[in-house]
Image (cartoon, rainbow, N blue to C red):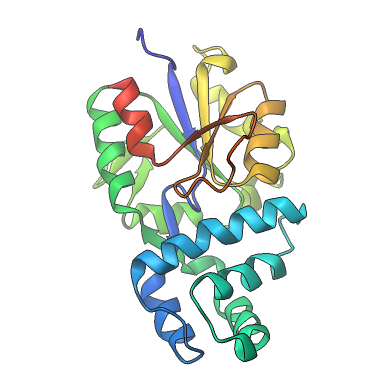
Length: 228
């Protein structure tokens, strides 16, 4: 390949899939939240930006939940209760709604022969969930990946760069700096992939990180257009 990168690794949440808006929209409608898919897409990235700004760990999601319900327009009087309900509803299994433009971009990258994989902080569910609508290891109904690494399964989670030790052997013919890692969290994805020697890219469709010292793109489609 003569393009910028020889291979691409993806985070799952916020890059391949989102918390299912078809579940969360009716849930938060009760509190005055906007029910459109676009509003919930926007809310995820606003919430991830707030989470990263606060320096929240992988296990800390209160800031995310508060920012999410505010972003969809929940009534001020109901913000605390709605955030609590979201916290109890947004289970790992709900990270399952495929991002449409990402699906198209993955197909483009695969058709061009770009090697790909997934490295995600998850709860043991990510491979099974992705297998139903986005990708699988090897040939199958969706886009082929060389690996799908789930932090719960391997016992290491971002921001530790050691999680990439479970993915990089599948791309041993490439130098790490020629492998892009695409995520949606500064605190988890940018920090860990930089430390692993990869080229870090943040999905930032609403320009929430203007002026940042790392590469940002609005969608995986942008990356595909550069590589294909």
